[in-house]
Image (cartoon, rainbow, N blue to C red; front, side, top):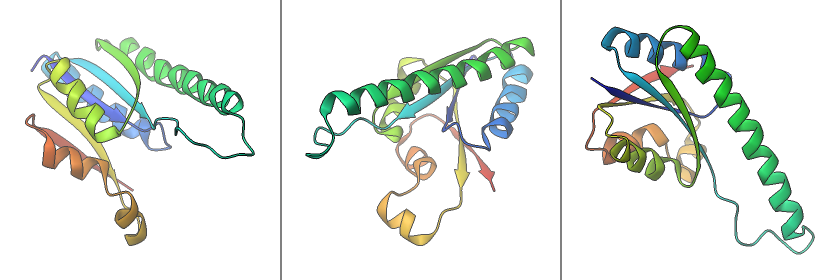
Length: 144
């Protein structure tokens, strides 16, 4: 195993997921790719919000999330594991699968959060969609 891709959403449970992936990468001598996907900015926002204002706020969110991801990458590197962080825009499932092919990863790691039935009906589960659509093995860690 040479490359592991970890999809992270930078929530309060990211620490646990990064630690598990880091341990696995260390065990196999693999590089750990941390991928955070940001939902794309909608084409239409509304009449009361200027497009420029929305874009500036979106750019700030993207920058702050890149900083947070880089902190995780540095932490992993300090533990002796080769790591790199990527922030991309798009639909999480598609980006994870496309990047796993592009980076020629051997394993995809995702966390799985429990959500209520309404959430699943509206949005679905990223980890479930990755498992269903990936040709690369996927390891799903249950997160509470």
